[in-house]
Length: 564
Image 1: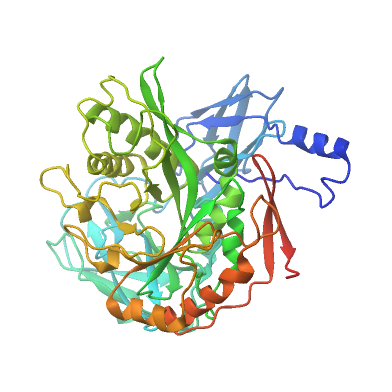
Image 2 (image 1 turned 135 degrees about the vertical axis):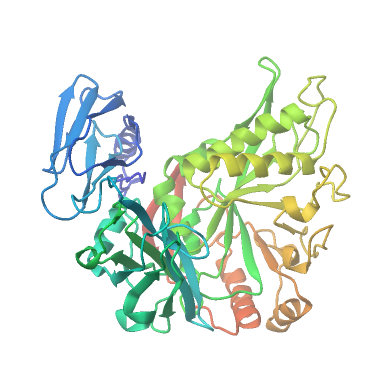
């Protein structure tokens, strides 16, 4: 669930020492969790109560619930049930929990309608509306800014064959958008323009006798008028007033939702390594192309560490106070980037212990991969980036002997991501210090199966390994802070694109005042402008703001106006 953070830092935080101390005290928040936290679905009537367990270190906790929910608080539990639904339609809401100054926790509750929510009896047949390609009823799709038309198709799937020919009518449900938003972690979305939606056959889906699936119904979308990166919802629902007898749709099964975004198809993407000990990630939101597309595609939080404890004989993920602060406040500093279309990866780096990314045994790789995947799932990240530097010492532990390879760790990471994360996670590699002989790739796999893209050391370009193409490689790597190989012209950018490279790397970009590094935006912005023209034939919107880091483990979410 989304976690809302309401802490605000005052502009004069450093003016009075006592004020600084009081602000630090406010950062110590209470904890609050509710189990189970998954959405609760009630039938229209005849439900059993559900027990929710509340855990908090605050002195007390409280809740608010929809009026159709019966709730009884007893100690650290809340017993909830739904009153009989006589409204004629389904309904949904959320129970909100509060405790001290902890982040609020929401549990979504939904209830079926009398007409469509219960399992049919007798000769009734359960049915669902599904996307023809994915077989699901909640689908994310995108339209291209260069080709904004999109053809989709939906179908009706029956639990058992139809006894006779029948028709089911689907209609647009623009009133559902608000409900969709808060049942999907308060996702901000608006209705797709109805003028851009065409339903074939007036939305009527036909099912022949003896069949369990209908013929696909064409849904055509014209996204010409959409804004870039904005979330648009197309929600189609069964017209229950004209629904044939003998079939029944559940609340979830009677509708299909398409969440649509308009994106620029990029032949070359930009990955930026942020020195988060110094730099506020929100600065990346200032860099947009003229059509509103973010210039940067992947942000790497550089860096978390792989550590080894000889006392416990474990390898584990270690985050310094700055990395951990960003993860703890993921809704403030990480999710806004993802919502804007920028993926966020966790950088991984050895930390002067025997543990590295290239020398783990099978057991060590499995242990560390599980730890990394858990962090990505917990904090909402899009994978990890590998950089083998600063490993020192040796150990006879079974976690290192016999050693495998970095490719085996990638293999275990891919498995762990699939098990723990509900979204695709990628693995990227920085060439420096990495064994690019690619030895140790597990049997049946190629390097391209396990590494999504890799970037070269400063000034160089990476080359494809087994199973890769130039689209998985960087044509340029720029060190922004110290100025190593710090140049890029429009013609060079065009040549990179023509040569077929898929990535450009930017390291230690620091477009802000303060944070321990010199503001390098005045030097780097012209390079980004040249890249925008060469890569995308677009101008860069002029960045007008910046965000700061104000101390160890402290970042400021306040946008400041640029004066340089």
